[in-house]
Length: 208
Image (cartoon, rainbow, N blue to C red):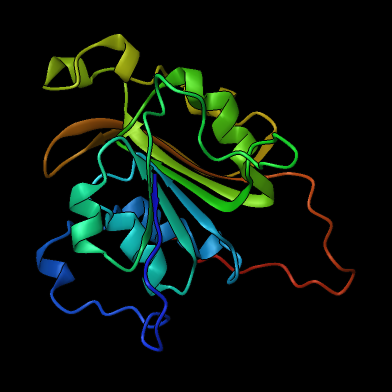
């Protein structure tokens, strides 16, 4: 079931008053690499949780769809956003073009703190050519310091590089973060195949 915000003169302007107190801050990795997105790109936030990255991309002017099994909290925090309630692990992928039966494509696909390997093919297919995948989640080693501990929820060394083998890798990291301490693996990658005009200027992405 998808929740569409009511359309009104004010609907196109996000009212963020107080949201900083109800939603966690976006991941610094997502913040850093969201500039890879085309300004008009649509965004899909998979396993969107509280909606923190839905809010982040909405603030940047993108149309965002958040999908999760439980969207009640996110919908309360962001009633003007589009959320899709779906069991993406045990039911068919819900974002499919009704006319063609093909997976819907987005200019940006974001996944954080979530891993379900059976979804890798559909996640890759959800990224439009020239679009961006921003992925960050727990990796092997996390089981030594806290949850999640089960191997099926932890990326193995270099796993995201294998998943994105047909993408252009812009950034990749794996290691330990602090505050709180956790083992992570993360990637920002662009799907190959977009045709650019001859006079297209390359994007400038600051590296820190």
